[in-house]
Length: 92
Image (cartoon, rainbow, N blue to C red; front, side, top):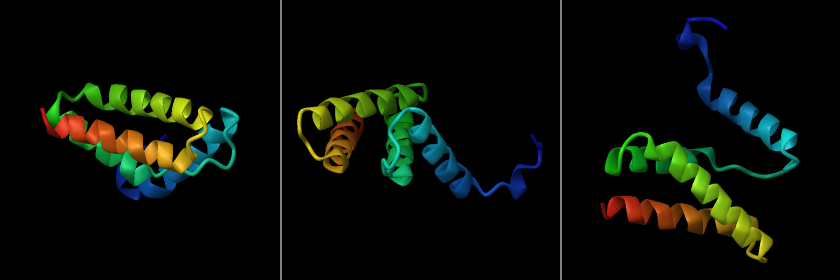
């Protein structure tokens, strides 16, 4: 791994990582709205406390998975969980 982060294409790296991770977890074909997840993490880090960002994104993913398993369309489940978490963080 290089120390020269200026040459890294972060959006592409994240997109590639999302595909690799979803494939590895048996979620091939899952569409990940990376910008929405990162925006939620940013809101949470600022409104609550920085370590709340990864915790929030984990809980949102878990909630969306449960909603999807209960019959909610997966993209809708994710959008609604993100919106709920962002609204709670912004009220803090």
